[in-house]
Length: 305
Image (cartoon, rainbow, N blue to C red; front, top):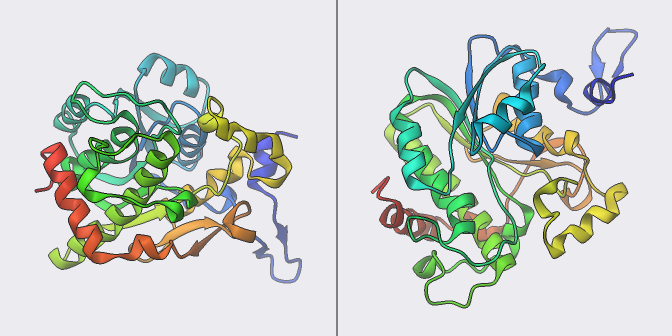
């Protein structure tokens, strides 16, 4: 039996009612025919699984990837309506070019692209690579595409946001000594605070668009494979496999959840399991810090001021 299909149907049917019981899986995805979804970083890992499953249920899926050639190879043979476009979220020029070429409604934006624990480096814009990829690039992309959005923004974060000591005054690591994992945690807290402030602004404007957060728990993907954090992948039996890691993103993108919902695995510590709505850390619910972060982000990117 196809392992992917098996993971999509790991439920039971109540013989008396005919209804499915148990945990939410990709088998519960609604029909997405007629809806357009953009998934960044969709050429591999959780982004590719997310794109694949949304395409399977009828969505028109735009894959925003750094290498369109690799993206086309990744979706070759998959059923669905896929559109592969170049997008490097760490490069503000690429983000602006992508947004300028967008036409028509965008129902769901999934800010999935990310890097983890990478050495200090600067982008062509002079920004910290890790912060730009995980946060400031998606911040700018969301702001530029907001006029086209009809349903929601899903931003992928990490439980490690709880350990962050984000310095909004030094968001781009100019005065502090750079530490790869600290920068990763800070970028993921920035994502959580961004969602909080984005939802506040959407609500204040009367918009029906929602901002939603998702995290995969700890999933055995290639994200940490190049770093010391890869040690967790040696404990795969304790973690989410990639198929389950993508479920919170799929749930956040398609289910009736409130604005600024935080979706993650339902297991102990939200490390593994099936998706449910949880709560971010208290550091991610600081409204004043979220507002300050927005202004700092707008100053860095030239978007959303």
